[in-house]
Amino acid sequence: MSSDPWGRVDETGTVYVRTADGEQVVGSWQAGSPEEALAYFERKYDGIVVEIGLLERRVKTTDLSAKDATTAIDHLRQQVDEHHAVGDLDALRKRLDALVATVEARREERKALKAKQTDEAKQAKEALVAEAEELARSEQWRSAGERLRALVDTWKGLPRLDRKSDDELWHRFSHARSAFSKRRKAHFAALDAQREEARKAKEKLVTEAESLSGSTDWVGTAARYRDLMTEWKAAGRAQREAEDDLWNRFRGAQDVFFAARGEVFAERDAEQGENLKLKEELAAEAEKLVPVKDLKAARAAFRSINERWEAIGHVPRDARPKVEGRMQAVERALQESEESEWRRTNPEARARAEGLTGQLQAAVDKLRGQIDTARAQGNNARADKLAKELEGRQALLDQALKGLEEFGG
Image (cartoon, rainbow, N blue to C red; front, side, top):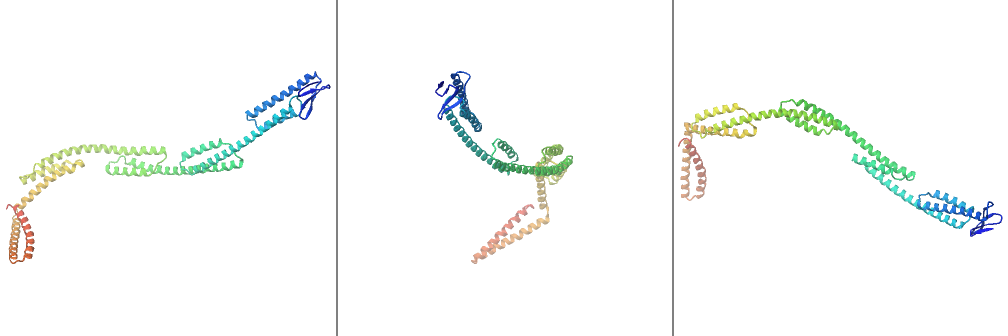
């Protein structure tokens, strides 16, 4: 019979292992010596030890699932419980029990972690839904649309919740996206309709602008082009390609008209500039007639100058008041000279002036006598009243005497 601390072999070849519950039969050995029998079953024990060690490491260092770990533990426990090995089987059971506790702890940790991740995922998805519902009311069509697409990508990266919660949140999320898409589609459909109306309106404006491009009614057509531009701005924008094409045609028609007008105005400005020089020369010639010495000769000379003036034509508008003012000043001087001469040589006017002067002189003399009499009588109030009346008559007399001087004395 042979034995070691954990097992023995009896004389019949039966192999035993020692446990806390007593000896347990391991098996029967008839192929060799008892030592070989013990060595064989000790190697089987060592194999179980190695497997347990490997499982312990896998549980601690890998993401081995609790289910697979439990299956592996049960398989090893079955080997230990079947007593087909010689060694400290009770120690192996304790290691397996400890491994069960570790697996269970890992299971709880993973369960808690999963619950936390699920809660975080739910909060994240609720936040995505809230943002999507807010964006659904936005009119920032491009930025809101891009953000909603980004939210979809974020949603796909989050873990699934339980079916009911996930479906409810997804329904709200999807509904928000659909509502935004529907509003955006309606907006751009309305915008397209507006742009089509703008295109039709601008087509009419372009047609009229092109029909006016050959006009020579410079003032009226220029005013109409200004009105067309106002109508163009009020019509709104057409689709981009149509807008660019219509604008090029509209602006091209205007350019044709204003280029032609510019050429005509340039020629006219040059002609009017020459006219101005000629009229300035005539104005200088007319100004030499003043002061008037010989009224008849001056009047004849002025008529000659004026006839040449009228034959010249227009001058630039901004220069017109000054040059015409010079001629008008000469004409007024001639008129005043003529009126003065007429008054001087008119016998009837002279007689009327002398008669009026005599009447006023008599009235003044009479008032003075009345004033002297009133003061002599001590009637100062009457004297003061008559003095005020004298002032008025004296002023009229002075004016009449001045007029009489114009008749030569």
